[in-house]
Image (cartoon, rainbow, N blue to C red; front, side):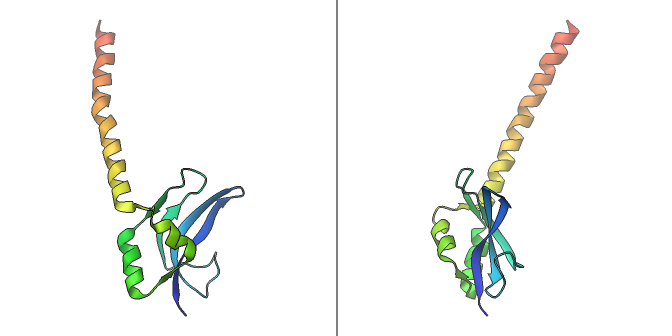
Length: 110
């Protein structure tokens, strides 16, 4: 039995969302996965987020990607860079918030 890197469908009817998973080839498409590697959202912005280090590891071990996953890898965004970008985005509004509170306090003091 070989290990495959493939898509498993999530989401609702008419709103597909896919997870990129490592699974035993004998398991069904909705079956148990060994590891979760990323996501693909075709309806939203068509963005693919992938843990590239883990993907490379599984390729090295001998996992075989499906044709669809192989085509999505070229335009995938690394999961680590996405997490860092979200952390930077959450830090920026925190610096602006005290300035707004000072303005409210100054207006109520007058």
